Length: 345
Image 1: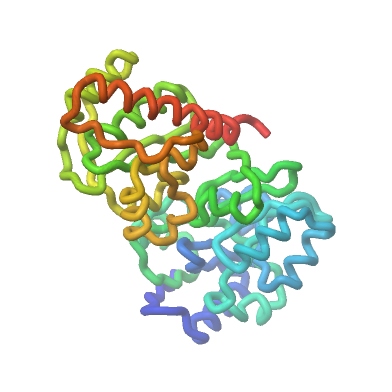
Image 2: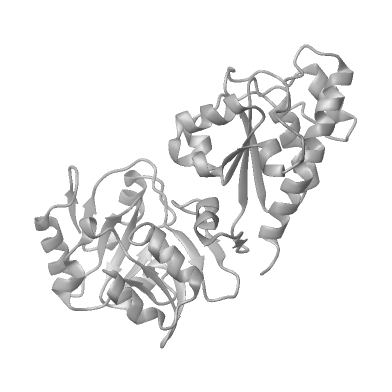
């Protein structure tokens, strides 16, 4: 294996090196977007890595359109918004179903045109960093162009061969951004869980209760729910009022401890729900690209007349009960929204 550490962007010399190895039938580990692809002109060379079906790299819109025949409106919208980029679409072609990805042309430009051969790819899904790649793949490929990275994110995989688009893999492009472009909700495939983050100030009252209530409501569903505070420290127990209030609902928060909000939590969430406008603002300050999937709980649940959910900290138990009641009522619409996504197409 030839390991080339690239400082900054790939240069033309790096692409020439990759084209030479690929042209001789070799296997190359290439950076692409936020992740790495294992690429070859021979599909059989990818089978030892887990490759099980046709996945092709396409280099421009013209080539993409030769595959999709009569495209659905969903496919056209997704291609317009996210290709080139970190999107893999499953489409029906003349040769059957195929996964297509159009890499950023500035990243891999020229390799495909220079070779004049189809390029097949397998996306690395079991590594989180370049160090993981070194352990798992370095001795199995002929060339590795290594641009580093401590947080590898796969492409988002969307199947547009059905009447209803289905997200088959979470990735760089958030689910709600896919929906924003399509103008409709999408289903999630059986291997995909929905991730939701609740945000309040101290993470000892409102967001903790919301997490407990929704976990109880969506028990046994493919949902990951967590919570954080915009002005808190790590490890504070849930407030007594919150603990007693949800305990009456059969919910145990004795193992809940506060967590300060950070960009990593936001990045991992499909949906972020804050209790007050300042919580929404703080999320966007930490990760501006999360704006399209960040809402107030009242806003997302579409409860008429419901504004921000006020902090009950320091109030009577009756106030805690009232706040929990408002949260539970607001979460019913949220729960139904998630259940629809998780139900079979």
